[in-house]
Image 1 (cartoon, protein in one colour):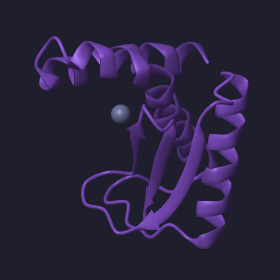
Image 2 (cartoon, protein in one colour):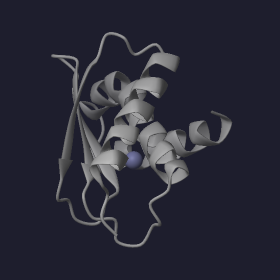
Image 3 (cartoon, helix red, strand yellow):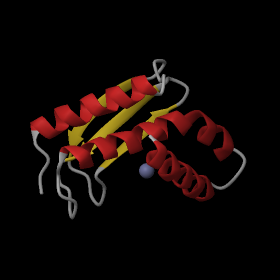
Length: 114
Ligand SMILES: [Zn+2]
């Protein structure tokens, strides 16, 4: 299924909602609606510049595209921004693959309570 311009706008609004709720006012969040394989969305965080580059995939392979799915995906990606400073710091001390696994475990737990 393809995400539409309306989906992209809704996703962006949800990202802004969660970023505000979590007090991430110091981050400049930028958006891209792009072809991406095997993901719903992604975020790349430049911790030094405090720029988060958020991508919503144009093609969702398996998931139905609903407002709930877009909102949950936005929340998930914003939680990565929340943890970005910590993960960047930890990454300099342990292998990156280890950090990503632990980061995702925390993100999934936070998703459930927010
Ligand atoms: Zn993730």
